[in-house]
Image (tube, rainbow, N blue to C red; front, side, top):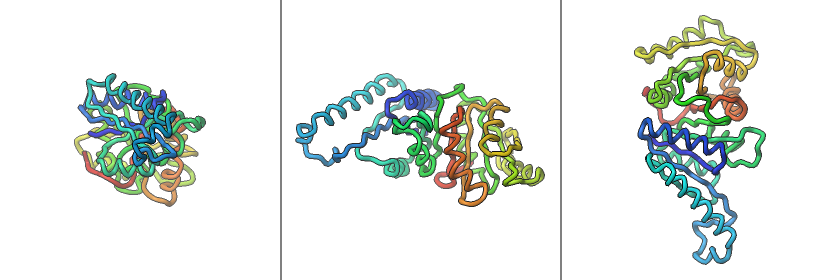
Length: 279
């Protein structure tokens, strides 16, 4: 497995780095720590004399490189490398992610109220929306590691077995139990028989696995997800998104992003496109 960790050397990105390193120790995964340093000057294409023309910028870049080198030395026992890019947007980073074949992105965020962090707010949201691999957002760090219980929440509108298969690649090395969940709300009410049938279809796709299924009734979807996660003592919430209508529209445009930035559970977004497989 190949894991990307965007880092700005803050405490949240440190938590993301430590998770990726611990996961690598269990799975021999490759970890890439990526720092995007935005400059008004295109440093890559700048002439060699640019260091003399922009001494403060050159000094700052040297500091960043020094920080990355420290991380390489600290975690030299795992397969870890660092990258430094300049003048790069989140959209450009996600294009690079697709080209490089990453299997997982792990990002830390200060949450919705801290505007000083690059790996936060709108950046975290865009990673969830644009990445073609799972994106794990650590807002408040990790409650427990290795994970014991993962809550996989779906609206059951489509076949989510490929995305569930991708989740097993994270769960299996940790020996974590995956629970299936559906949140029933008054605005998108579904009768019990219909919901149970959708959950049984997911379970049937993996006949050799024990996949406990839960239906939770709540007025708001986000509250229901958190309440269900608390009920089963989950360590992480995994969300699948698909379309642009009804429940899926709420799920895609608001729920994943809201939970990733506000709730105390790590949240992993599984986008409705990209590499798939039943694990």
